[in-house]
Image (tube, rainbow, N blue to C red; front, side, top):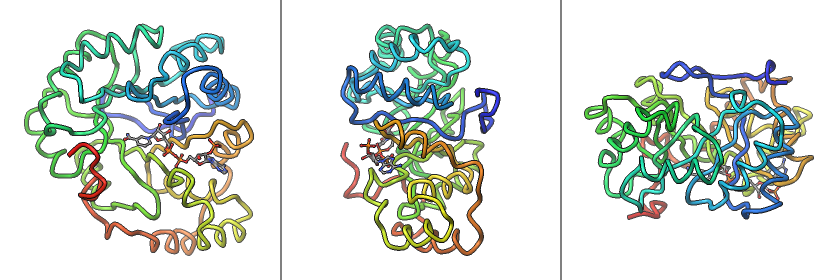
Amino acid sequence: MADAQVTRKLSNGAEIPVVGLGVWQVPDGPECERAVAAALETGYRLIDTAQAYGNESSVGRAIRSSGIPREEIFLTTKFYPGKRDARVEAEKSLERLGTDYVDLYLIHWPQGGPTWAWPGMEAASEAGLTRGIGISNFGATELQELLKVSQIPPAVNQILFSPFDYRRSLVEACEDAGVVAQAYSPLGTGRHLDDPAVERIASATGRTPAQVLIRWAVQKGLSVIPKSTHKTRIEENFAVFDFELDEDAVSALDALDTTNQTPDALSRSQKWWS
Ligand SMILES: NC(=O)c1ccc[n+]([C@@H]2O[C@H](COP(=O)([O-])OP(=O)(O)OC[C@H]3O[C@@H](n4cnc5c(N)ncnc54)[C@H](OP(=O)(O)O)[C@@H]3O)[C@@H](O)[C@H]2O)c1
């Protein structure tokens, strides 16, 4: 299964799977372990957690009991920027995850500014606690500020991205800087699944709304991390490599954008940290 992974190459040389499982709002415990186990059985090799999600222990248990060699799994966690030292917090994450390293460690959001936490992220990388470092919820301006001071450039920017949150200029800014953009909430945390335009394209394509939304993000060149705790949906969300959205479908989805192709990661009212 792992051989069939579709990946994108990161600036640190690693390959990140294009589709992964997100586990935001999945409680620590059996539900989280079952979701991660179902994803790994299905063929997922990218799991996205965070210190703020409180479920790193369950993610780690599910990975260990899967029997899949650790090096075949791409594991992401995120620094909670309410803390001071990203390197120290990475060590605590590794203890909870029960692993020696993560593949990607992201600043969860640029609380307090885009640069202060980066030396700690670089220290985590240099200490071998993580293979790659990156950012999340950084707009184009914040990305540029970080690039001016970083010794190691960010490999990934994980952003709110769907046809309704297209933020095209931000994706272009990431591409120009050699940063792979990764789409979070690709289904709008479930809200976009019953949109009439999405449903129409899904029935015309013979696919489900979730598959259409995930496939659209894949065709835009992003890595995508839908969340589900249901095995059948986890399987459905991974089955997006045997069809293609045609130009008309892509244009119709592009037209749903409510961000006006913004270079910002979130609108002012969405910035929960300021
Ligand atoms: N960096 C950040 O700040 C940030 C912020 C938000 C999210 N994220 C990451 O991105 C991941 C995904 O985003 P998200 O959790 O907001 O939500 P999402 O993936 O956009 O949508 C998940 C919702 O859709 C439902 N769903 C999933 N697949 C479905 C399907 N095939 N058919 C019908 N319903 C389906 C899920 O329900 P069930 O679970 O009940 O199936 C859940 O309610 C997160 O888990 C997290 O890892 C990162």
